[in-house]
Image (cartoon, rainbow, N blue to C red; front, side):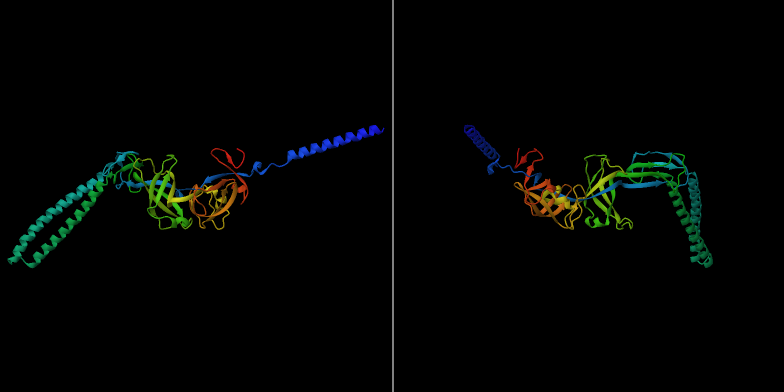
Length: 397
């Protein structure tokens, strides 16, 4: 029995020793690696290098294209059109006859006035001869003063009658000339409202003639932005009909009166249109260039924390909205300091469509965080992912 008990004790001792060795070995395998093997983990972000470049502040509006010059042509004689010589789209020259109106009645009046004028002129010629002869006789004492004075009065009345008939004839001739509708300038027929045989008159236009070599873009601007524009300001126009094309012009007119209901006023931008691509009535997008900076320190507008929405007293401006200038030029961004995020106060200037000018707080070559900025805070570890190569710095590759 004693031998058996000793054997059991020896076996227990051996098992206990083996278990201790096993546990120690396992604990050693689970021990943390040295600092050189520690893996740095953090929030994955994307960064962009701070650069220098050109930026501009624009005011975006919408507007309509109107002809640079547009005139409606009426028939001044209330009679029927005998012929219409042009159609919509025809190019015309100044002085070209576009249509003719029946003018028999007007012409008959002209003929009658000419006949009356000739009769009065003949009478006037006889009176002048008679007056000259009577004046000589009066000087010789052969004719009384009363006779000479009566003849002089008759002569003056006939002269006045001639002048009256001459003025009436001039008016009649002008009316007869109104029997033809003539182009007042070089242009294109934009509208034709009547056909041959229709009744023309002063109340309804026969044609609209337009000159599209230059056009105007008419837009409305709010009272708040009115102080940011001026005559001659550069404007860029785009239209869906010509994707990618930019038409440049300048502000040529700013209306002095605002609509009392909308507090908006009308502006006009003049554009050259020699190629005729812009048509009257087109809807266009308009960008007025208010400010330009040639050599600015730039970061993407996406780098600004919430794009100003939570910056004290700053306007609500977000990427894709109207480019402009902030009222309070202070904002915040996250910078990449190695593998650590650092919150930075910056001063901003001109806000473009996709970029913003930094006037103080950032240097060219630094890295600003654009993606992931809402998942980090000042001092937290980060991993930088290059959006082009999809690689990460500071972690597994």
